[in-house]
Image (cartoon, rainbow, N blue to C red; front, top):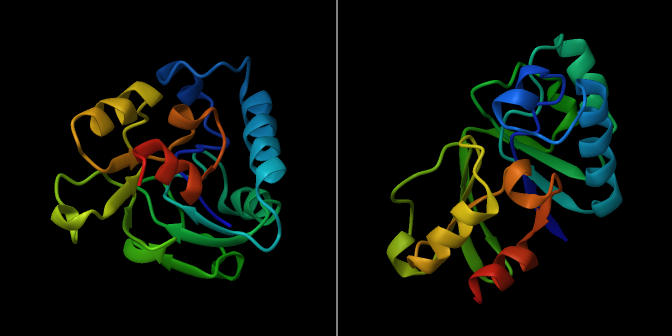
Length: 170
């Protein structure tokens, strides 16, 4: 299975208030996001992490947390990502495209107005803006195949390619 997530901001206390996250403190947020992730993702799954995994913590602490996340991890770097231990990832990039379940998908931390094959039915998955489900619904209703895979828009869980295809009915 292929999953996507973004903007976990593990270790970032201020993001709780900045994004109105439903957690009492950073420890509860970290535990919940990691637990949700590992409950969905298995060791053999592929997970595209579209940036901002950790923030406001030492890189050694970040590496330790990232090592607990299941799956074959591919990092698409965000603006808050550090130089993590590269061995924790299958690949690290700023931007990539994939074919998943017969759909061409453009992956970047930042949302784009236009992306490769955007006029030919391709999807664009991103993070960065800390959108909500309503933002994804507005894109869908406007015929825009752009989806925020960030944790705030997806109940603090990774989202599968199948869920995204179902969301867009493609």
